[in-house]
Image 1 (cartoon, rainbow, N blue to C red):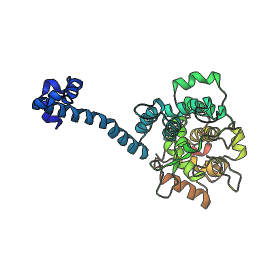
Image 2: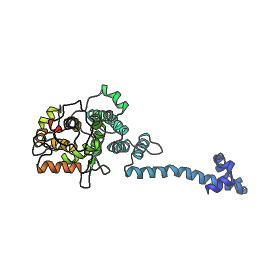
Image 3: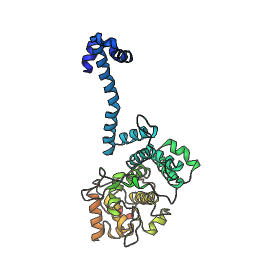
Image 4: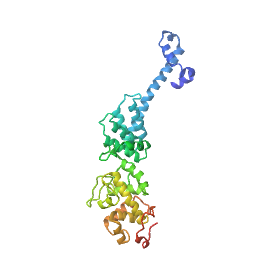
Length: 326
């Protein structure tokens, strides 16, 4: 119908709508078949235009339901501003939180500002500060500008909706689903310590299954299962703080990489059993736990060697006496 209208009345199709509809409703319109035809075309055009936002909203809602981040952000903005829908801050906040759970930095910052101001919720400055700091760590320049005015959010936890597991980042069929916020921290911080994020993800999956509260029978704690001595050695103040624990574990991995000249198997064995044990056996020690540990991680991270910072530490003396796998 729209195509017929455009062909039959091209000049009137886009510019004469208000006048034609008024004319069509007048008594004179009964004597003007052509005018009525045009009015019908215009009515169809208007109906289609009115239906278009509904169609777009339905598509956005469906995409948001699937977890599509651009759709979540767009829809959140629509509800926030009340564009062709009733303004709904609660709905908008929930959508921003879902986008934040999927790692969108803008959404994390937005959610931090929402918690800080208390829009449609009880204000929580601690959570707001935590999220703004997280956005800054992930590269948001606006968040970095705000750091001078807020606390670190110590003692606060991210909103529950940000703890949704994701299915697209896994290290094996039997591995746990990865928390997106942890994956993002690894992606950002591992390169800062010259460590491959893929190796770190594989190690965390085996060590703690992405549980920041995990404690082993030997009192290894947190994401990267740092024993208290190792945590103290690398300046970790709170082993159950995911970022603090991650930084400590990364610092240890960076040191081990230099000490064992990037030999991944030796580094992993030392992470599990200690560097002194690896030196004593001049390789992966004959402990079933350690060998299974190395096998699990290297079945996912298949690179036998890893770049290292040679200036960081003098290599272990055993590196001159064993053949390193290249």
